[in-house]
Length: 58
Image (cartoon, rainbow, N blue to C red):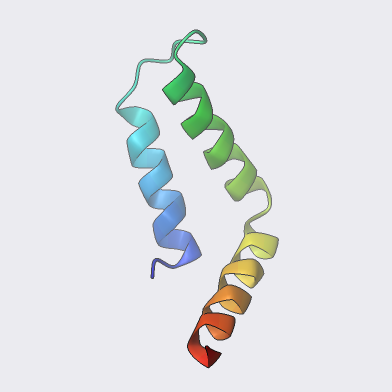
């Protein structure tokens, strides 16, 4: 499982593969995901941690 930091880095890398084109749906999806995760990083890290703990218990 990826850590929150690894996921953010992967989203950033994927976003850079696409032109900064407002009409490109893939770019927009990656850009919005990157912005959401980076803006709410503390909450996202907590969510990832909690989900990993739940998965480990199952």
